[in-house]
Amino acid sequence: MIKKCLFPAAGYGTRFLPVTKATPKEMLPILTKPLIQYGVEEAVEAGIKTMAIVTGRGKRAIEDHFDISYELEHQIKGGSKEPLLDEIRSLISKCTFSYTRQIEMKGLGHAILTGETLIGNEPFAVILADDLCYSQDSVLSQMVEVYKKYNCSIVAIEEVPMEDTNKYGVIAGKLVDGTDDTYRVYDMVEKPEPKDAPTNLAIIGRYILTPDIFDILRDTKAGKGGEIQITDALLEQAKRGKVIAFKFKGKRFDCGSVDGFVDATNFFYGKES
Image (cartoon, rainbow, N blue to C red; front, side, top):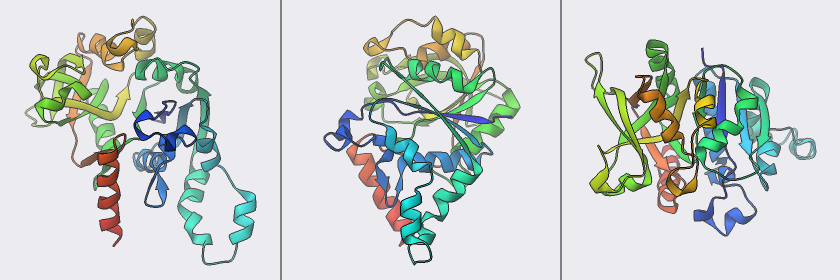
């Protein structure tokens, strides 16, 4: 049912300067794989094979990564290093990658709207690569199952310390169908101060969106930080009872921060050891 995954990847990655001056933050490695490859692998695990990537200036390395490097492959062919490319070769053979550029940085909502030309009129997933998730059953796979049940937009949530609510979109909702992890959302606030936050249930970088979100985004005015916020657009859907928040099973690392990036590196190194 969900055939396409959108990757907003046009941001500057300023929290990682100076390395992100010339290297896309999505290409920062956790061990030997860049963040965006983990995201693509998660999408594939959820049965998605069409990757739509919104890039910007200085992001050419993303396109090069998901392409054949004939000179490199010729150099290592038949040697001990050749198997190191097996995973990325597999992704390249399984998936279709398409790209468009976000000319101006106007927020996540604007980046998603920029991707409309790659998505068309169908429901789609969104992965923010700097939210790296680990679980036995991938977060996006879990969300696809929730979408099949409710057939509306789905946002992944987790509990965060109240003092951190100003870093996230925060939801308020009611548990549905006797579950302890699925909420029908009735309110959403972008980066509220702790005293103004309705809950400590924060949206993380995984979404399934219905295509009407594009028309809503076109009419959404700039909000917090002067940017077009996906949270504001989702609130319009939530007012019609068309947004479900799902508390996923698994572990998330905020690899947009240095602390989260180090935690992820240590975690995955421990799994490899």
